[in-house]
Length: 129
Image 1: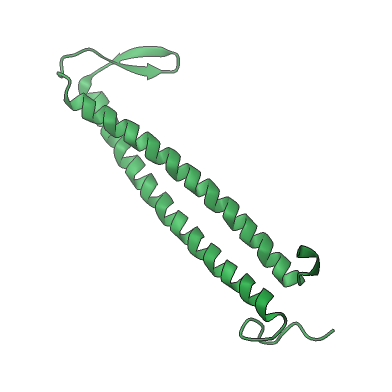
Image 2 (image 1 turned 120 degrees about the vertical axis):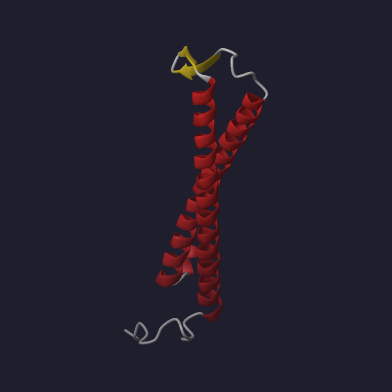
């Protein structure tokens, strides 16, 4: 199929494949951020059920280090807020990539269906060398 494809169509196909790879990467990043957000939100909710005088520990590398309730609560709130922003940004990026993908896919389909039939894609054209 790719053997008889015009060079312009081959180039669009490669762009389409690159966009598909980008879309998969963004989707994976978004899923990871959503998972971390859910875990952090669950921890923050659980923290609300704990007495403020209860000894708390934070994992630092391989160690557990004692921390204050207020510090843990503040850190978790900040982490949740940052992750919410990250998930939103990734969602927008995912949508932009999807729109680019669909647009490029339509261009490629028109190119393959219309052949070298001119149209709005080539004002000035490639010439008939």
